[in-house]
Image (cartoon, rainbow, N blue to C red; front, side):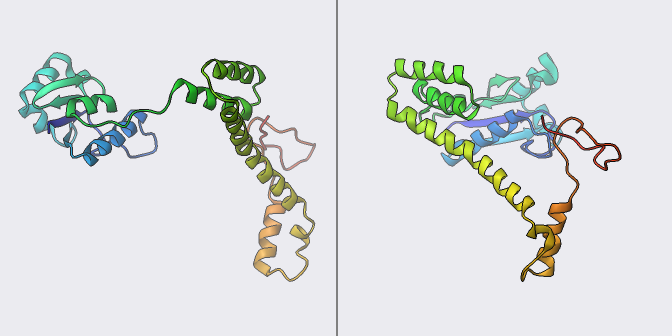
Length: 221
């Protein structure tokens, strides 16, 4: 099997997949490398910040850096020859270079329309739904499959609505504050904390009544 080497720009760790603001390209590439390794591929990665000598000792990499500087990175070398420079390879490129078997994608035009139908239902987009149902019919998607997509989208949409209603009922339950019955002291205190916590909303200033403690609260819409 062919040997693949990846020469990364300066990263915080061997894969770059760390910290709070991770580049999605690094996440996808790490997953693709794992997939290739599971099929027996021999892959090495070199980090400019941690292994600068590997860059200096490889003639192909050194030449690319002399021509383009760090813009040449990341750089992919297959069997000693530069295969790609300036970006990370996609999975299909790895499969081609390493002669790996790639599972064919099932995301066809028909599947895309079923996803779009579900998204239209979940987002209450009437023109979107009309358009995507029409397109799905043109592609030969059955009414039964479209119904499944609609039903699934409805279930996903209903779940947070039910959770919100349950929360409202708990917050409005008189016993949450009164603490009646045989509830433990800890349960009573937790209920009181929920029921008496300062109300906030998620975006924009909330209207405040004169003298209200919620002057700095935010609202969602």
